Length: 245
Image 1 (cartoon, rainbow, N blue to C red):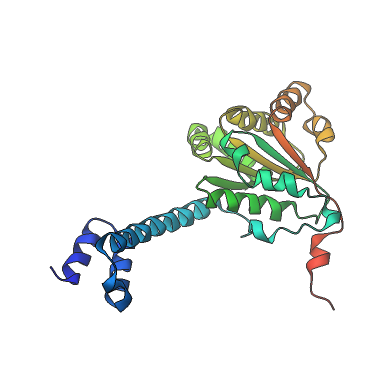
Image 2 (cartoon, rainbow, N blue to C red; image 1 turned 90 degrees about the horizontal axis):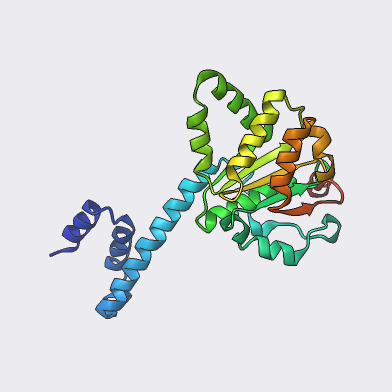
């Protein structure tokens, strides 16, 4: 059987990573001298890498991250108040697998969104599903879904993700329905999936911001007992990273 027939059969079986590897072998003399088992292992590794890459692209597309940030690009300058040991532990993504939460707070420009997206991108790279929302956007989507009867479908869609990133928390006032939708999100994911919540508002001001004692108590109780926290500080990262004039 010639190489063309082998490639056609691999395509029929959906083994596209192996197709690329066989084509590479055919044009690279060095592979001809390898033992059968070594060549087979190379083909299997190529298929596994191809599938991992396809899965990562699919997860990142579904994540809709605002910024294509990478964990290796995180800025650890001292003024930012990032603890390297804590960051190393968080970047294992154990907290996501254990359905814990992460709260990022800090003033405007301290890099909350960039850091949130770096965590999201890193989670995707280890095979976890992620979805990014600005908080008010998701709450608006839920209000619309409540009106048009599609709430169950939206809840099901959100529940599919291992990590839900809610950015810009506290940036806009909550409507009364928004307060209950926020509790709905937090309650649905308690002990089953993770939330990364990023915003300017310090945790101690959440109760006053939610401004509904029963809802606020419920949200804070669920978040407080299952959350890691990072309080960013320092100068605006936008100013520090902008080109010199």
